[in-house]
Image 1 (cartoon, one colour):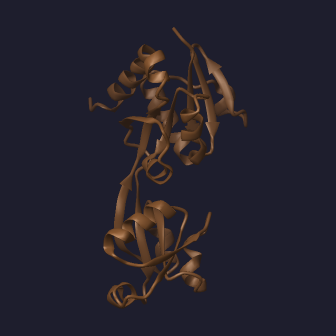
Image 2 (cartoon, rainbow, N blue to C red):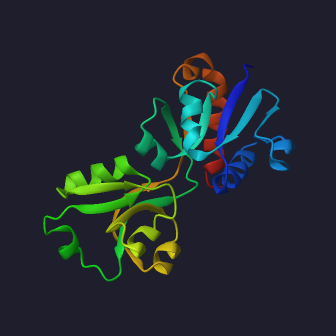
Image 3 (cartoon, rainbow, N blue to C red):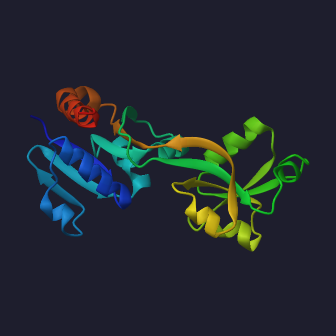
Length: 212
């Protein structure tokens, strides 16, 4: 079999990936699980661990043949990769959140330009364009919930799992834009050159997700 390179996201989603892959019979090298090593080989599989946003870059440019990435990143970055399968892990929502004291009818529908803090500028812009609402994007890289608290932005567009962080910062969901979960993606050339190897991985993952 040909060597297959797999890019996986670091952080919380990696733990979910490990559980799903190992339940499908795909086991990770111990040096990745028990150390800070970011690449390792097991049989015909080579694993890379990288920041979630970088996974589709490694796949698009062929360093990795396949990878696991959130749908939110695919929607925001629009990488030239093939989306194979919804793995059903890492579920979350991208929402528009506003201060608890704000009234949507006063905030959005007076014709004023709304300042939106987000790390998803493309998704935010496309959403508000469909609403006919004029916005100014404030592109932040983290602690998005802080923006309305400090007055630097009127609203935020951010990813939410439980909503706890929003509540703790006196924010509420105005509208959900899209739901997101982890997707298996493939390099377009690898999909043809290593079709059998990718097919085997995909079959194993699908089988692991089926209810007993």
